[in-house]
Every structure is written in C-alpha cells, then in structure tokens.
Length: 358
Image (cartoon, rainbow, N blue to C red):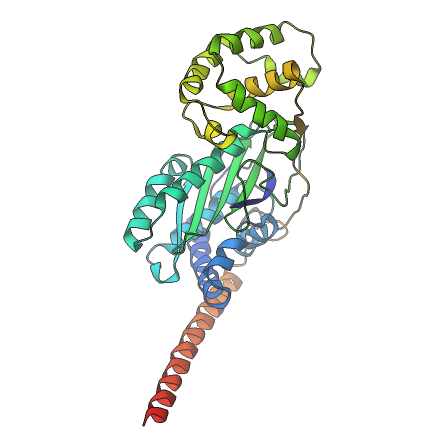
C-alpha cells in the first residue's frame, strides 16, 4: 500500500464533449484489456500509481495536456470502460464529487459480486488515503476526486485530486498497495507538482516524533489541550505557525478531543481515521507537540517534479478523429488476435496431451 506520486495541474473549465469521451472510453478499454493480458492485473493497476505514466495515458486518450480535467475524465473513461468486463479481474470505484463519496459502497458491492473477501480492508485503505492527503498532508488542496482501482486478488491503486481555489491549481495524488508498509510514514516514492508552498507534512519522516507525541496528547484531558492551544495563539510565533494557528478555535478543538480522550487511540493511523478528527484537530495537536514539547515537525511541501504533455484544448494540436478511430481499431484488432492466439495455443496443448495419452 504505497503512495507513489503527486501531480499539480491548473484548473480548467469545461467538459469533454460526448464524441471525445465515447472514444476515450473505447480506447481506454482496449488499452487496459491489452495490458491486463500482456502484463497481468497487478502490473496494470500498478501503472496507475505512476503520475508520469498516468499523464501520458490521459494524453494518449486525447485530453488536455496540463489541465486538472485530465484526471477526472481519464478516470471516468476507465471506470466506464471496465463496466461489464469482470473477466479482466480489474474493477473501479469512486470518481469526482458525489461519486467519490460512494466509493466504499461501490467497493463493497463489486467485491461481493466477485466473491472477494477483505472488502473492509479495501474500504479502510480508501478512507485512510483520503484522510492522509486531506488532513495529514496540509498543503492547501482539498480533495474532490477519489478513484479506487482494484483487482480480484485485493491489490489496489488510488488516483485522487485536490483543489486549491487560491492559486487556481489542482494537485493529483497517486497511491498503490504494492510495497507500502505504513500509511503514515513516507508513503510516496515520487511527487510531481507545478506549484510549491508551505505545507504541514505529518507523514514525513521528520514528523515521526511529533506523530507519536500527538497520539499521547490526544489521550489527555481536552480542557488541558484547549488551554495550551489558547496560550499558543497569544504568543508571537514564526509566520508559518501563524498561518496555521489563526483559524484554530480552542473551543471547537476541545469538542473533538473529548472523543479522542474517550477512545484513547493506540497509534497515529487510528487517530487519523477517527470520525471528526480533521485537519484542524491534527494541526492543533501538531503545533502543541512542536511548540510546547519541542518535537520535530516537517513544514516542507513534498512536491518534487513537474511535467507537460498534450490534447482537447488544441495543444499541441487538435484531436484528429480519424486517427483516433484508427488507433481504437488497431488496439481492438490486436486484442482479438491475442485472444485467438491464446485459444489456439490451448487447443494445441489439448491435442498434444490427448496424443501422448493415446
């Protein structure tokens, strides 16, 4: 369970026209079918965790080269393409806005239909991924798109996106189940972004001491924590702390801390996953840990790399419908040939087995 990357993209308006989205769906289905047969289910799902591969995939489908819509539309095309193709063993849930909130139910329904045990583990992964990028990594981007891709063996990948209305950019986060040891300790391997800023990064290695202290603080009496938070708001602190303190209400945080005090969470992942524990509660505990108790805390935005590709808006060129349709035909023909080849090989092996037995 590993987060492998983040991408930051400018917010663009508009939607993919029907003629384009229908073609995107067909081509996405053909490509994923071919990949599943050639690479296997797990490797196909793993590719979605690479922000550079995903961006290239979106451009092959013909969407905007650098807009936030490449995420939502590409994921939408993939989800639509996978409907009715259970034989691939790859399933999709979630999406943009209201669809993202239906992710747990969609995971459970599809897992039930294929007899996959451990749907609760997949649902927990989905929820924790969203919690980490919304609350444990406070970089200014509010998650509004959550796409969950999983196999009938229980492997999964997540592509989710957050919006920053202040700078007009969206940031994309990629996760994958392969190789992740911990949701809250450096879960990413590569991060791509155009804009960087000040971020409260509670999943950084440098924040490990603070995470541990936060769990201890969450078990203490709420009135004590609220009192310490109030004293912090009255101190002259570095500007970065003022940015995170000015919107904190000690009284509101105290109400949430009453729940954590009653629950007595055993670790940071449990604390993070508790209902009602959001960005402000975590921020309050982190600041108290760092400023009152002297623990280490990372304020570095984890964004690392940037990229650009091309599509719908006409850059670097308009979508060529004739070429697009030809690409779909080539992919579908290749899949048919591949499937015929598999059947022929199986038939040949059967004949050989019968010949030897005779």
